[in-house]
Length: 170
Ligand SMILES: [Zn+2]
Image (tube, rainbow, N blue to C red; front, top):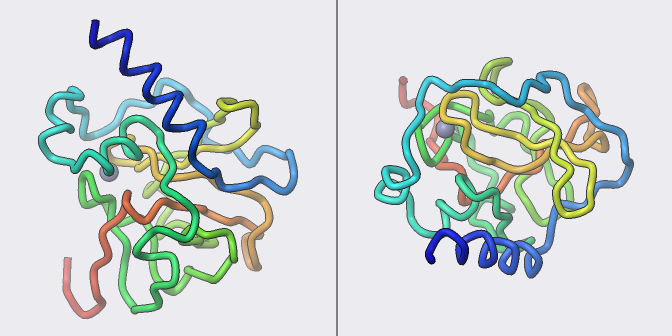
């Protein structure tokens, strides 16, 4: 019973949310493997214990928080953003910029392996999904309308990240 209800609920929730809007329809997928295995893999029941229901909905069910609602959208402190699920460092505040999109936006990840990109054709849109490179958690989408030097906009849900102030060593 429960199994049949969850996908329906997910679709209902997703259809009510605003999405990062894509301005072009080019794909920026580089690592387009769909069978990536991640260093941290857990059953859904485990993730449910670790994450809040809101975090679970975004990170594990690929939800999207409402535009302009996230705690890091207009956040300008210096530091790094880590995956809220596994702590993997994802983005440096140095690459964060004001995109006007309603979600925290970065022009590049903190390093090459921090995230994995994957084609996402859900909801009638051709987009590129951003996953945490360590746990595979859904973070947001990347678009090709970002600033120099990369021209990319990593559009990320605040709820999928935890900020850590600079001057703390890993
Ligand atoms: Zn992660």
